[in-house]
Length: 428
Image (cartoon, rainbow, N blue to C red):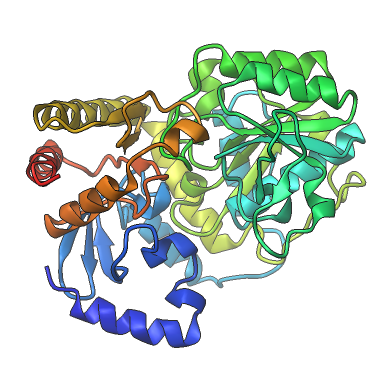
């Protein structure tokens, strides 16, 4: 495939946008080469600026669960735009989507809409601190909750340690209240709690990790977190920016039958437009201004175009719950096919899968946390990425990102993908 137009556009973008992109992973730094510029998309396919057609496995990093340019979403946005694009005042559609979301997700009474998953997670932590009157919180190495200062923290040298910032611009003062734990390691979490008695407001976790590749929780991990939080007066925050309305109608809480205290949403809830949200039971949400003392605001929060897109998406998912079973079956079919050809070609790998999220890790050992994910062979991944791109398949340009399966993918698309992986892996 030729990418002359994309290369030209990237060179122009670098002159006026830092790194030529508005989000770092798009720059292909992890895989090398020049990023692909998209011209259009429909269903399971992208068309780039050079006219190449690609099967898409990132789906805008998750929201396109029913495919690109899903007609009910497109129609809803067009009709709403005719009435005005932003008012900074309440609109009826905000209540409509809020009521539907609350009806779909267990254990929430109220929801507030924001403009991104980052904003949702940032606001959830602030709310947890205000509600508990405690400052510290626990996050997990490898889990990404957006680029708010408190979340850009890496682990220190000890097993029980304060985090240290891993981005210039994040102060040590901010980092001191962030405690780092290992994903899928309850003993580590318990030790952190014991070392910081009555100081921890919340534990925030990607209930199914997607930012170190797809890593499902081990059996008992989420249940253990719930119990530790209950026993120690700590709020449990599920970051469901990726998993909300994707793994089940009611997200991870429904899938595993585990109650979170606060839930963060993004991706699917916006139908492809910039939307985030956070939700909880009444006693917590009523701490938010204007009812309570915890301040949170946003000029474009509840934007009518975003609300129209999100409402159309949630209505489609609510009306046809069989979608989630179909998605899981397609993902299982793809994973089984990949497993078969990689084994036949004697490639070292591990596949992680849950619902419509799947990752191929080029690692021998099981991948259960950031440390094991980091042992993957990145050179093999680079060959894998570029090999699939040549075959007309687009996966995330990073070994640390999950694939997102869309219902628009046909079994012919999946078979084509498996055959392409067979061809590419023979070259390793």
